[in-house]
Amino acid sequence: MIDLHLHSSCSDGILAPAQLVSAAQLSGLSTIALCDHDTVAGVEAATLAGKEQGIEVIPGVELSVCFRGFSDVHLLGYWIDIYAPELTEQLDRFAFRRANRNREIVMAVNQALQQQAKEPLAFNEVEALADGVMGRPHIARALLQRGYVTGMEDAFSRYLVPCDVPKTYWPMEEALATIQRVGGVAVLAHPTSITRDQQLLTELISELKELGLDGIEIYNSLATDQEIMFLQGLANRLQLMPTGGSDFHGIEEHDQIGKGRGGIRFSDALLPPLRKRAAERSIQVN
Image (cartoon, rainbow, N blue to C red; front, top):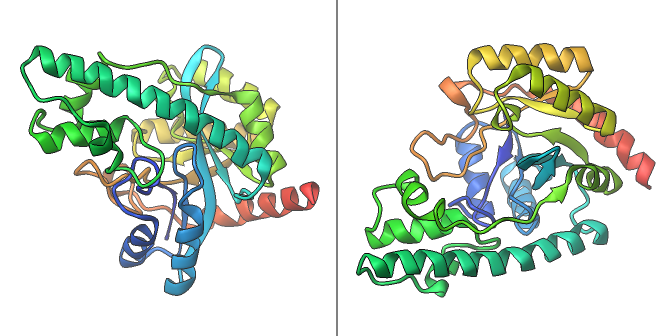
């Protein structure tokens, strides 16, 4: 069994890369993909741990993308060259912008806390919860540790959504081209998070196919059984490769490595077409 969508503490997961690999081994997985948000900081450590523990670690990333009026579309890149300057320099630029955004969000949250006569958060207190890229989930966890909220959902609804600051996104065309130029396979993560309007989603994914999309994450934790069937049919019709992953962060109670919604597992039969495409792309870029 496999899991092609995992997050570590280098973005907004709670397990360090090596711990994530150990947890995958305990879950009986043979292959995983580390796809942290807009960073590849944890891939090297995860790969080393994978070699020590007999787990294949596919180097991956999850880019925050905008497309046709939709923001925060998530694009997965598998088998990417994590040392390619074209990728790392852009990720560094995004990390710099994100750091400024996070400071602004913490300041806005602190204003709300002060109005409620609560002690404000210290930025280094939030930063300590992140091994790499700090994000809103780390601010939520700081609020939770202080006892200001009852859970992650409460933190977002009461503080992080009202205090949000606009995020910077990759343009879709640029993100797809970058993944391909660094030897990667581009896959649209949890498609129904963009829209549950199946006609519109069909139009969007058809256009993405023309732009170079390689696959879609059919088996995921957000799609219902009916939506999975729809995505299967769409992938077959557009000749897009199917993938599957838990999108594990370890924050919510239902998070399980190697399992999606309803306990669905992800078969290693998904891997051969993806490997073939990755090998073809590697030849193209070298």
